[in-house]
Image 1: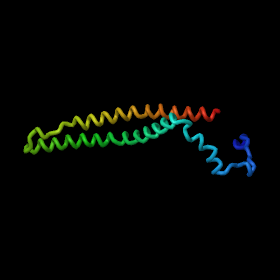
Image 2: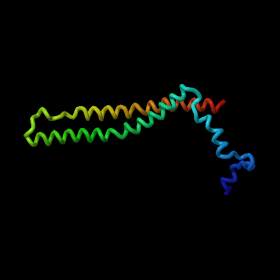
Image 3: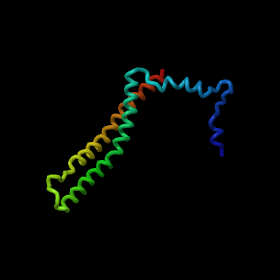
Length: 129
C-alpha cells in the first residue's frame, strides 16, 4: 500500500525564502482592507448585521417571557377581585414585539448575505489581478 503522504509532492522552501510572520502580515494586510469607501461601507454593514443578528436572535425568548409575565399578572389581578378591570394589560405589545423580532431574525441573514457577498467579490477581484 502506498503511503498517501508520499503521493503528494512536498514543496521544500529554503530557510532564507520562508517569510516571517511580519512579512506575511504585510503581504496579506492589503487584501483584508476594502479597496474603496463603498466597499468599506459594505464591510462595516456586514459586521454590524452580524452583531445585530446575534442580538435579535437573543431577544425573542425575552419577549415571550414578557408576554407570560403580563398574562400571569393579569391572572393574579383577576383572581384577587380587588382591582378594576381597567388595570388589566392586554399582551398585545409583547406578542407584537415577539413577532417583530422573529421577522427581523429572518430578514437580517439576507442583509448579511448581500453585504458579505459584495465584500467577498471585491476581495476576489483584487486577488485575481
